[in-house]
Image 1 (cartoon, rainbow over the protein chains, first blue to last red):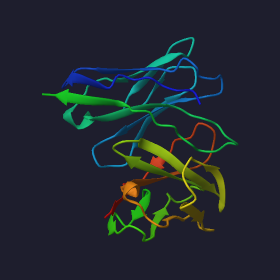
Image 2: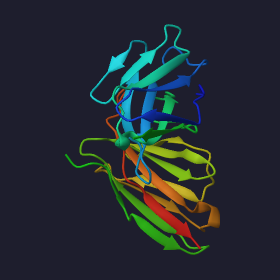
Image 3: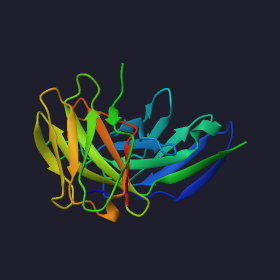
Image 4: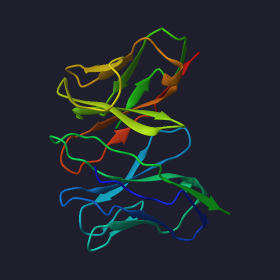
Length: 112
Length: 113
């Protein structure tokens, strides 16, 4: 499995952009980068995913480096409700299965 | 559109008992996977079912088992409960296409006394 490395915690001021980095230097060519977040005591919530190109949706943007060894999740205007643990995951494709390997994640604290 | 539904949300058992947790996936989703979350080990993959067949299995003892029904609903069972089985058990469903996202339920919180 390709492993990911994320900072344990980060702070961000409300209204500012939150940039969450992730290293995945052993990622394979057919592996996607996924981001999920988990707000306290809730199930993880899908945010975004990508393979090679940068992606944007209503929640966030995902920037993947050209060598695909790292990525950054950007929350453009963080709010207090974005306080959560953010997981960067490289999806393992096993017989077209759906298995996610979660690391420790980054605990993002958005402060007023 | 209804999300992933897990029941029960909370339950308390004693050591040696068994427990069955239920998961109803989003309508049309055929893949259901289960995860265990504990403070010490984080989120760990248990197993995945697709079309009533177990497709992938994580590194858990045989006391942990599951099944999927023809309507894609899934159950997991833990027999001979141990204190260390206390955890949040999460179910996720997916369309099962390459690159598709998983949708998680709110989880079933099991406490073993």
